[in-house]
Amino acid sequence: MSSRPIDVEEARALIHGSGEVAFLDVREAADYGEGHPLFAVPCAYGDLEAEAVRLVPSRRVTVILLGEGGPDDVAQRAARRLVALGYSDVRPLAGGAPAWAAAGHPLYAGVNVPSKTLGELLEHERHPRTLAPETLAAWQAAGRSFHFFDVRPPAEYAKMRVPGATCAPNGELAHRFDALVPDPTTPVVLTCAGRTRGLVGALGLALAEVPNPVFALENGTQGWALAGLPLERGAQAAPLPPLSPEALAASRRRADAIIARHRLVEIDAATASRLRRDAARTTYAFDLRDEDAALAVPVSGAEPALAGQLVQASDLFMGVRRARVILVDDAGLRAATSAVWLAMMGFEPLLLRLAASAERVDLASVFAPTGPARPSGLSAEAALALAAEPCTAVIDLRSSEARDGCAVAGATWIRRAALPGSLPAGTRRALLLVPDAGMAARAALDLREAGIEAAHLVFDRAAMERAGWRLDPAPEPLPREAARDRVWFVHDRHDGNREASLRYLAWETGLVAQLDAAERSAFRLG
Figure 1: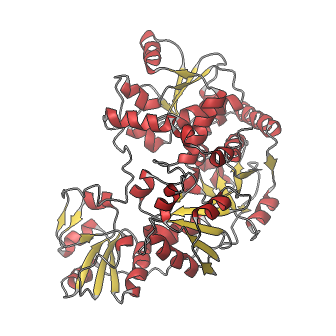
Figure 2: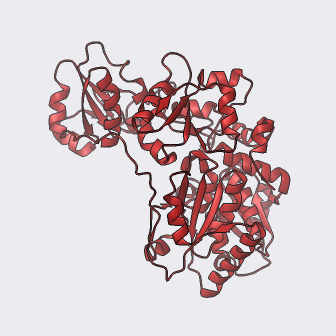
Figure 3: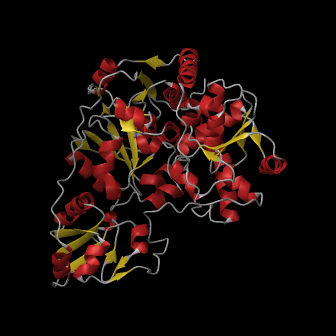
């Protein structure tokens, strides 16, 4: 097992090569959001051990780590942690993100950039039909007949929606199309928060060869708000309709056609199980079925995922480039459309369709997640007594958002990456206020190296109030320069900030122009 630096050009050769490689950005979320290489995957040091084993399950894969460079680069610390977990080839990028930019290679703002770039490339090449917000508003005012779907997950739909939109996430919309749209001629309009999911959703329905005219609302909810039209907040998504035998058969026929046309690979359960146990390759497994189907035929080892979100945020699900991906489905349409898009981003998709009569399937990987042992915690009363002892620092390791919702008097809010150097001189013990014992275990590693004993208390507001802790439910929010665990890149674009919305849409539409030749060739649109 080794950890040795890698220079920018050697790293790019691996990233754009033919083998498996992971490229993890271990900086804070704000740094990632302000600028990172196209295929860098967010994996902040605070959650490193937990996230790395999920994103990079194989310990044999070469792992490139991105920090800010310099003698105290967090990538060097992350490398030691991953080697201790058994990763055999860990390579901190020499010079970090500044070296990448200095070599003339692009840094991309925002999140989910590979998926968003795919959406923009598809829009450039395939030109899905779009509908201006003003036109949609006129259709609504005139009482024109059309079907209108918001293709985001229910939680995002609840934050804000264009009035009249029904929640039907990408993948599910195509699968349930005949139940949601019983007539073959009425127009269908799709929206998301910005551009990507509306465009990809429209192209997904085109893949499925639905007969209706399909439009993506131009720039989604942001385009609607920029047109001076009101958004609704707090809408609850209605349950998706069940499929009749005829509608289920139609979904399967559409899947069959896509599988044949795009030469997608189908496998059986035995093959899927064997591939998951193949230590020579990384093979992810995702279950795209609805909850009822997953309960009827359980698949152990497959992570539940909405098909549309797996495509939209592929970098949050998979950290290894060119890995295999098993997509579990029933009729197969959710898996087939996802497979087409994932293949365009360089993954190797494999489809596993399960009949309702199938038996339990085991897709457990050979790579068992491991991490620091979770320590036992203190009660709120015992922790309060420890906090009063000399040379004890009380450290709040919750997210900045959680801290801003309820601060603890006498505690210092710190990110794990700042430990132990930010502790007061003479600190011999640290009481860690944490969201869970896993965070305590990770932070304790850093403190132990500095000879500092750590104990922890899992934050429980009610229990802490009973024990006598002083809590502030409305503290002064942390400044942005401190709260680096949040992506601040045009974060308020949905809160009425017109300038932020315009910057965000300019960023999305400008992604393709940022690509260099190697990055453009990584997307295989066919």
